[in-house]
Each structure stands twice: as structure tokens, then as C-alpha cells.
Length: 139
Image 1: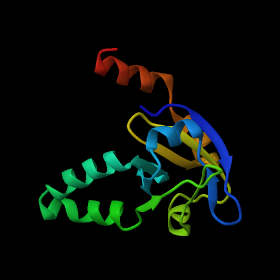
Image 2: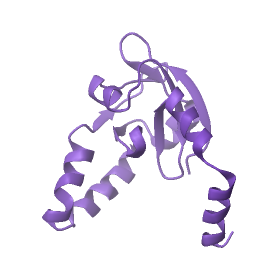
Image 3: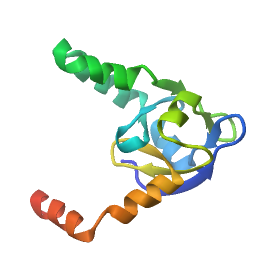
Image 4: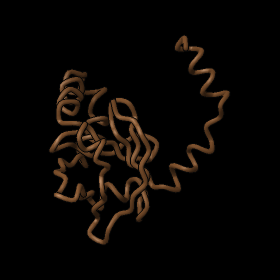
């Protein structure tokens, strides 16, 4: 399970230091692709293969835009010795990331957010909204 919130910055080559805790769980190689709500999502190779099989099993009419969204920009990354990963300009552009990022654990995957966008999203979430979701789930 991926947990935690980490703040880093991209270097001039488009690399970002990926937190050691999350790298260990993702593995030596993992996938970064477009996520929901304007962030990027990172998946372990095992989880990515599982997602791929599910999407492949969907009817073409339902899956075609999902395939285009998730797979067209997906990139397999290998952290370097310093723990940095190269994130393509296409992905950084999609998430409006210029320099500072929040890398967060999101249970079954990792999300990479522009730091200001992450702060803004957190400011919009109300405790009443979280309480209602917890009630619905029986917490």
C-alpha cells in the first residue's frame, strides 16, 4: 500500500527524485501515465499488467478512449542511482507541472501533482465530505 506525501522539484532535464519508500514498493521499473484530476499516476509493473488485462477485456466501444488516455503517454521508468526518474514533457504538460511537485501515496498507486494544484485540491476537500464517504463505507 502506498502512503505518504513528499515534496520535490524537477531538475532542468525533467527528472524528479522519487521518494525511496515509494520506489521500494513500485520496484526497479514502473509506469507513469496520465491520472485523473490533472495529476500523473505511477503503477508497479504488476499493477500495470493487471490494469492492462482488465482494459483489454472491455468492449471496444467502452475501452477505446480509456486506452488512448492511459496508454498513449504511458512511460516505463527506471530510477537512476540517485532515485531520480525522467518524466516526459508530454506528461509534465498534461499535469501542468513546471518545477515543484507533491508525490503522494494513493493506496494502490502513486500520484504526482503540481505542488500548487495539490495544495488547492486539499483546500477544497471538506471534513463533511470525508465524513460522508466514511459513513457510506461503514467506518
